[in-house]
Image (cartoon, rainbow, N blue to C red; front, side, top):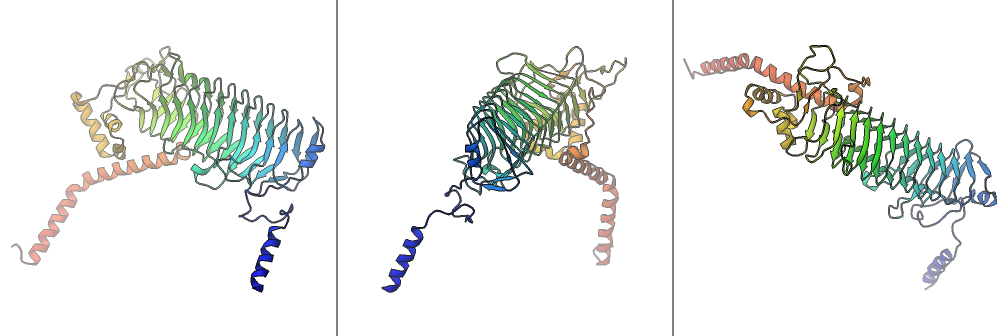
Length: 481
């Protein structure tokens, strides 16, 4: 009986204790349950609108709410630490600036979308912050005319399906996203946000580098998007510009450098697509504005496929692009021809590394048309698994038969009437470093071809040697005279 009373008293005493004080150790079981007041919150309460609060180096734990137009500037990279619990910074007033902090340790609740920096007001500047171990990075909701510049945003060490978005804009018109690095997150999304400029950013090891939906008048320029599943995806938007970007080794389940779905009035110019599964994937674009898809001065090199069209796609104009050593330069996902799409403008077409023609008059344009009508490409379009035999003796033999017997040659998928003899724009891409997987696949295919040739060359001597050896063994055991 005495033991029971003692145990009951101990439990009651523990239950009546006050909450954990600031600075006490937080156990894993207590995370996401106990809010911690941030010591900077009192300074924000005491500040007047327009004040600048300089924050000394150190660690400041707990959630922070900025509800008046002030500047919060870190000196020596102070840390705002969420302790693995909920959000870290929430901005609810317009005209706030947050600069020079390390922000770390959000919660992991996808339902609550635990976020490092959540913005709910316009004219906000988030600059030169280092975010790590965060579920969602920077989230702007109804926050137009904001600036997101020079931030490093790294996600949590979770499976990609359980991560949050590194950057998210929702109804954040005319926002500038510049000079940021986003990695190991899910997506960077721009939804219902028009007039946005995305410039000089890096995105890698994410699912979507940048994903646009219902966002018009967006410019994406001079960004590096590599080792993602998809570099950029345009959906249900118009008046878009993709200029001077580098899409390298985007090889996830989709593996697109750029995807276009039901998009209108777009300019794709001066970009580099190297080592992707597909350089550009085009579905239903242009959608409502005829002949408004412009693709020029881009380089497609060492991709599995340079550009993929769905059969019903019309209204794209491709000229002055370079298609260099893609396993398949242009493909159609299904039967049909690319009627309604043009591969030249003002008697200037595109450069094709597999073009067999010549330039007799020295005007830079080949004398014969470039036609995509290789039998092996036609077969791989129907059965993609046949790409296993790319550059092998099987590949060479199929196309040799198609050239020798015109009756089996497929109809051309498209025709470039003015193929260029030299690449119109030399981007100087080192294929060995920009597309190592593609180059490795090419090397393996060339090795397969070499082994095939060696097998043919040495088949006779090897066969003779084996026959002589069998004959000698038979004589040794008395099988033959």
